[in-house]
View 1 (cartoon, rainbow, N blue to C red):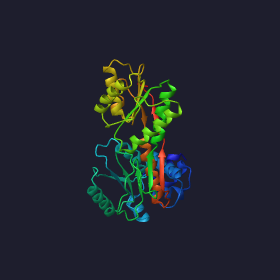
View 2: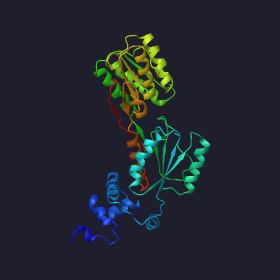
View 3: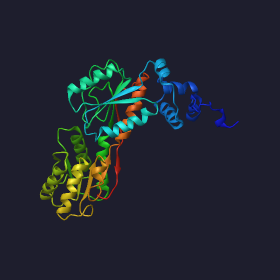
Length: 339
């Protein structure tokens, strides 16, 4: 008899079929989809992907009644614009959606009162867990009033080392950019970034200085240029650097907006990018990086992967398997035409 003939007449995919595709027992597949029991995150993800591939449709009411769960996860963000939280959310949904878990998005707009309100709302909805994200990489205070609900902090780690956090490897990102410039023969490298009170700006600047020192080099202009995360700052600081150090042959910028402003000024001042002066940005924000002239070489923080790993850690915590501390996700250097 053909495989299709063995399926129920309704055409509904069975749990056994999901188990076969995932290479696990029916019991393990059931636990992975119901949220019961402990298992490796990789095993759970394999089962969830198999269920998604087969379009497995479990009986939601029976599943919730059996597990005592609501199959909902709250995502609290301070990033109203969505520049950073949207990729994190999409990555989280890739991991959660295969298990038919709904995500409730709560935008606090950076307001502490709104945050407390949303925490209370999510508690009232009896969510199974919470992911917290934002628009900065600075450590943030932990949420209050969680009533032992599993929580993972994504991108902006919790200040409490006992919490679970997933963050970008900022030091690794700065290393990729700086070493690329040095390897390409640049010796007068300027570093321009955002506000000095932002952890991302300070950490990237410190590592850049350290790497240049190890190579026997100094920052062009003799200092880190801290300012705003904006194109206008990039345009202004480029002129400042060129006046202070006309022999500058590279700019490592704290984000893509600054880098785009820098390339605009270099072009207006008659410098060819990258022939005369190379430019590297940070974030790999397509709107900025691809619209720059020329398109920017930039560091990608892998925001989607941060969200995916945060979701997998949350699923493990819901099962009772917690792992305190910060897990960092490697960055990637996206090579384009500016460096």
